[in-house]
Image 1 (cartoon, rainbow, N blue to C red):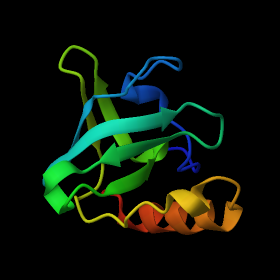
Image 2: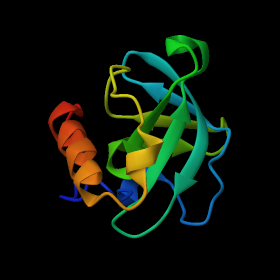
Image 3: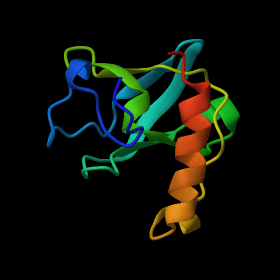
Image 4: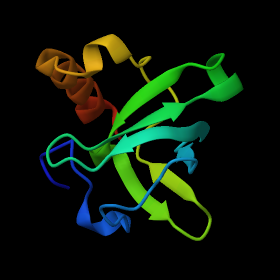
Length: 113
């Protein structure tokens, strides 16, 4: 795996520019929710997942480096972590490099490598 948690791995099957909005997201222990927003930005690629009823409609920010596989036919994204993810802080997400470092650090230690 690449050292960058904020980039898609070449083995995921994701092609930059593909709209992932609405894709279901599956963790190692079950469904997380659906992609609400995503970015393919270099060194800052991510998914924002709407968890729906799972934890009362909250959102989580998943760095692209947590993605194992993108199944285009099934419109599913498989991530290399459990459903236990910190809630997304949309106010800190834009322009707060420290927030990205904090989130990235969490997922670097929690993904199932």
